[in-house]
Image (cartoon, rainbow, N blue to C red):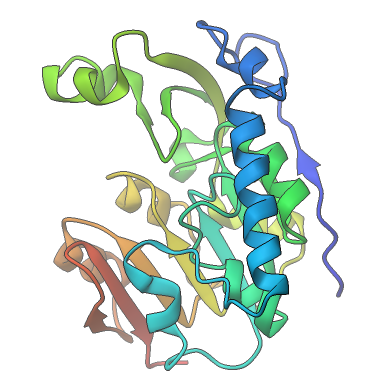
Length: 253
């Protein structure tokens, strides 16, 4: 099956479709002088560098480069926390240089729309969660490469400082990862890249490992043992790739 890039919008809990912005960041993304313009400029610069022969490693801490010795030459990826599909992406190289296909899941709809422009992977605008969360709308705080549940994070002075004096909140529809994979009739997942700012266990609760069992899991987490315990038999910790990024491999399949 061939996967074409596309955008999926879902009905939010207040009846509106897509992103709900309180501080105008949605409009900012629609102008060439805002964040959208900056990201487009960065992407064009990267393309120019690629044209000159530079390998497009975009991941933080060289994660994409570290993965290459473990991954097959082709496969299907799922990147959750996809941002614009370029900034700190763990799958950009796999798609552009190795012919992988996959999906990019990002809760902030303007970023997801950019990823559909920059990438050939399917772009889906949704927040991932557990089965019991599906169908609800999650209010989140936007901070470019980090978005988080607003009611859990912005109450803290630490997080308030991180997000700035006027953080942008938006509503994102909650989907389970398995419901998305079922909807697009995804092939077996070779690589699951999960960067969801502390909510990885909730996301994994929405992944049916009987129907969808990733061979490789690259996960940012502060609780790797809990992740392994949830994944269960067959999954083993292969390597710690950074201070909070881990590669887990399924040895049962």
